[in-house]
Every structure is written in C-alpha cells, then in structure tokens.
Amino acid sequence: MDAKKRDKLATVIIYILVGFVVLILAGILGNILITGIPHLSWHFLSSGASSYQAGGGVRDQLFNSIYLLVLTTIISLPIALGAAIYLAEYAKDNWITNLIRTTIQILSSLPSIVVGLFGYLLFVVQFGFGFSIISGALALTFFNLPILTSNIEEAIKGVPQDQREAGLALGLSNWKTIRGIVLPAALPGILTGIILSAGRIFGEAAALIYTAGQSGSTINYADWNPFSPTSPLNVMRPAETLAVHIWKVNTEGIIPDATIVSAATSALLVIVVIVFNLGARYLGNKLYRKLTAAK
Image (cartoon, rainbow, N blue to C red):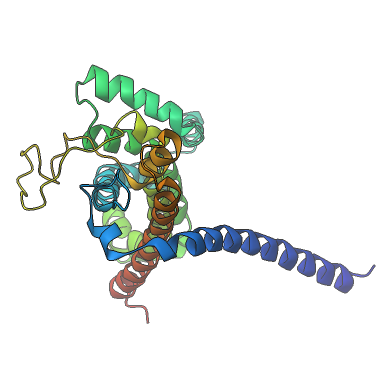
C-alpha cells in the first residue's frame, strides 16, 4: 500500500471515530432533552416551596447550582491563574516543578466522593461550617483547581515565544509582557479551561452531598441581606443543587412523580450547561477581539 492510500485510510478511520463519538454524544443529549423538555414549564422553573410534592419545581435548586458555580469560580480562578502563570512563565524546569505538576495530575484524578468526604471532615466538621454553601464551594475548589490550573498553564504555554520577545524588545517588563500580551493571547484557551471546569462544577453531586447538604433551607428572594438566615446570598445555609436533586428524587422516592421530575431536571441541567458554554465563548471571543485588536 502506497503512502496516498495509507493517508486516505487513516483519514477515513479518523472520520469514523469522530463520527462515532458525535453519535454517542448526540444520543445521550438527545435522550435527555427529548425525555425531559416536554415536562419543563414556567411553574417547574419558578416553583420552589413544593419541590418534593407532585408538580413541584426546582427554582431553589437552580439558583443554588448557579450560586455555587459563581462562588467556586470566584475562589478558584485567581488561585489557578496565579499558579498557572508561575508554572508557565517563572518556574524552572526541575524536579520541584515536575513534582508540582505530578501532584496536580493526581489531584485531578481523585474521585469526587473522596473530595466530598475530605470537605466534610475539614470544612463541615473541623471548621464548623456545617452543611452549607461555603463548605460546598470550598470542596469544589479543591475539586476544580487541578484541571483549571493545568488548562490555563497549557493555554499560556501555547502563546508563541515571538510575542513575549516582542514585548521585551519594546522595553516592557516580564510582568507587563505577561499581563498585556501573553494573557490576552491565551484568553481563548483560558476560557476553555474555565468552561470545562464549570461544567464539572455544575454537574457535581457526590462532593456536594457531604458538604452543601441534601436539603435547602427556606429561601426568601425578597431578602438580599447576606447575613440573614433566609437570604439566597447567605453562604452558611444548606443548599441542594440540581445534580443532588436528581440523585435524591431517584434514590429516596419521596415524591410521586420522581421520574418526571428527574427527567425535567436533567434536561434543565443540560440546557443551562449548553447556554453557559455558548455565552462564555461569545463573551471570551468578544474580550479577545477587544484586548488584542483582532478582527
């Protein structure tokens, strides 16, 4: 077989494998959306008080999921960004940095249930935070940091060295070059890392069962005082997320229409993740064009 035939054969095999992956993804998403979307309604999205009765909604669980995602990102992004900049731009290639990278890879492969038990022992019990949003956010930070740091580091390393040398040749300091040239150029890759980690956060259940709790307190959406026990912004209240809600209604059988609720909640979870991804990519591309003057 000559080189051209081998190349065509390899191309066909690659297309078949890619198509197989796409079909699996389409099948999973299609099944979830087709099963759940017919049961979505405004009442289901806006009702929270009767979420464990027939016809109840997931208003509180949706808010808790988004709130935990935002809070975890606010905590983990600055740490991951600083660590990635250090590893990519300042750290020397020696056994210490290799050990750090190996540790990050090990942490990223830890089962979420282990992270949840660690968060329970440390934040819920030792620190006395109890089952709360802050306990869940801190546990998810440990869960989120390794993959976010690795993705941001790879994005920064992917910026061509010529751009760094151009900045230094203009008399910019190393930090100004990183801040003004490297980070804007790496923004699409950084955004991809944030999206990947956000998807894991939003769909996480095991770690939150042991930290954020399995049932939420009564939320008063008219009370925005973060220190009030019924305020949605109170980080010390327990909070059940969409993913935990799906697990709970299917395992405990506490509502008569558990199958319908779990199907609709699963579809809502997928839709929110898709909307978040598309919105984040649009915002990232807009920021990239603005920061780099790219068309």
